[in-house]
Length: 176
Image (cartoon, rainbow, N blue to C red; front, side):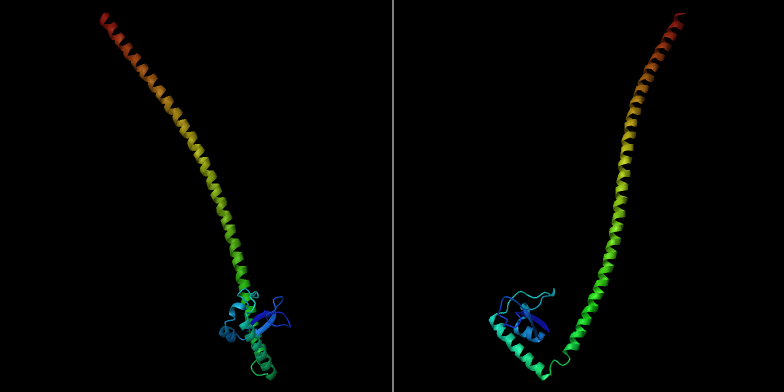
């Protein structure tokens, strides 16, 4: 069964308010009234019935009243409606449980993400410290290279002086 809403106590063409008119699903599909019925979200459609649809709806209301008075066609309707309602309640309960599980999973993933972010931050801090140490070591290496060059220059000068001293010594030995 589906519902269409019109103003209570008046014909469906009234625009000011709506009440429920029960229609059979097959009739709705046959007559093209589906676009005016309740949508998937459970809220009433805001479309008002067109003139052709109004006549069909009025006929359906009359037929429904007639059948109710006779007590034939809708004898098990309440039980069917309750079964559908119970089924929907169970489905809603299952969805709520699933939603609760998903929320817990989300919280777990958020905690894990937070830990990973902390780990990344820590790693980045270590990287910065290591870069600073490397920079300091490169500076010391440059200083040592400079000192090495200076020492090598001094050694070269000393070797040159020793050469001269040996030459002078050899000259002195030849002279004496």
